[in-house]
Image 1: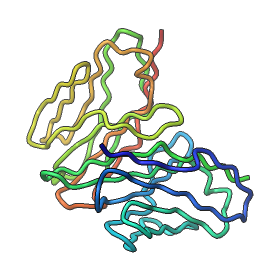
Image 2: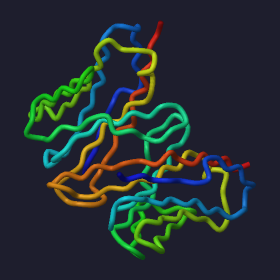
Image 3: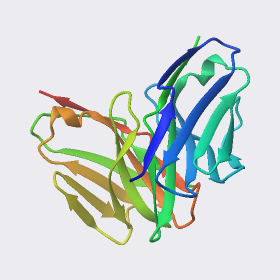
Length: 114
Length: 112
């Protein structure tokens, strides 16, 4: 069965510090990978998606970047965090099977920038 | 462009039925999904429906799809306190990849 991991679960960082959030998927090959951000009490905002190693698409201009160094690893980074980067970050994966694509989510990382 | 809308809040009494509504704009949607997010957790896939279906039932959950009106609903029978969560409607289109659009989520509060 497939599982998706995210770490850390919670992170408190000062403004201007760097960021690295990691997401790994087990039990599937060549998944699509996604990073979402959920601000407090808000819906999901798609930040990045990746259809393969080294292939990253950005949905919104921002202070963040993403990388996919391996097939099942997706990393969200920042060189200098802003207060507005606080939020709940969710990683998700999907595969297309029988014409249906379903996204499955990780447990999330709660980031607080002070 | 694609847009998915939901009412933001719903309160029901324990034991009553909950109906969470969703409207979408893209008629080329192939699958529509309902996800549940409990406090501090990721999203959990509850159920999905293919766009050529009208209804799907899974235990206490019933999904109704009105494709003509682009309206999707999730009915939870005998709502329990454990059903308190945010429920997201999402649509995916024929293309693979980034064409997966979420609604803003409906916060369901179950009152004792």
